Amino acid sequence: MTSIFDSDEFNQNLFCPRLDNSAVPNRADDIFIKVENNCNVHARCYKNSEAKFTILFFHGNGEIVSDYNGLAEHFIRFGCEFIVCDFRGYGRSEGVPTLKSTLIDASTIYCYLIDNKIFKKKVCVMGRSLGSASAIELCARFPEITCCIIESGYADPIPLVERRGLNVTSITAAENALFSNSEKIRLVKCPILIMHGEMDSLISPEEAKLNYKNASSVHKKLAMLEGVGHNDIMMARDNSYFSCLSSFFSQVFR
Image (cartoon, rainbow, N blue to C red; front, side, top):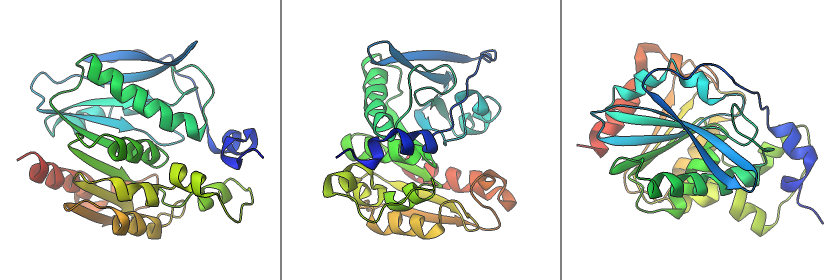
């Protein structure tokens, strides 16, 4: 029997790809990484000649790389180079996205960037919303990663299915091990910051709390940002989104 996570019904309901042919901004390099025969995925590196570390960023479901063209400078101010990755079928990437392929591709992307010496010496992996699955996958698999940030991430794969209007009452142990962020995060040992809008109606703040509880990291922080939800989290008052990131980086990279 085909897993619901492998079904076209689930994946076509889950992903919202859109294409992009906008201009590449100055001080940015486009990278195309072969993840499968006849399938390349796109990443963009926003350069910083003085960077001390790299942020590898997996965006949310309704986003593409170029959505971060104007935001990249805010991340670069932390002293990093900022690399944003698309899923298959998004932006300039080829192929058709599935939840499983995002996890497999994350490792392929990470290893390509390592092998081609694109990363700085220290690497922070960050995932927003659906991109949280890619980030947790990498941080569970590669213990050399310096730190992890999860923004508005999900915990349990069953609500992930139910939010697509599909019914599932249980999943197998193998499905849970592969797709449950709250189980896989037990394998994450590096410093971790979990950020979530306290008014998030798409992914419950309780999922952030479960991920925080299960994370094995000695250095872990849960930041519930007041007055914001899923898609306006950067607009938290008193610049608390970026202040929270700054505080975390100052502790990890001091």
